[in-house]
Length: 87
View 1 (cartoon, rainbow, N blue to C red):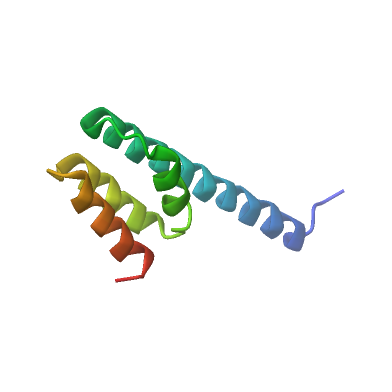
View 2 (tube, rainbow, N blue to C red; view 1 turned 180 degrees about the horizontal axis):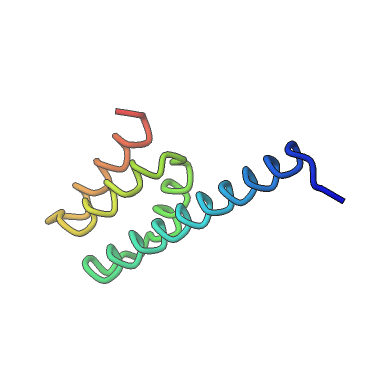
């Protein structure tokens, strides 16, 4: 019995959504690890909840690079707030 093209499309879409979710979760985990290592962050749960509101993987990747480069945690928080407001 042959699978329908609609069924195949649903499966492929589900797989892609799973990949995107995994990439998002992984990127957030890396951002938090970097910030914790660099700044000994005690507020990681708060930052995690803010990061999780961002669905755009490109924005999260920019924040990853920001976490690597910022000199002060406050600068990262400002970049995070800007990203959350779509700027």
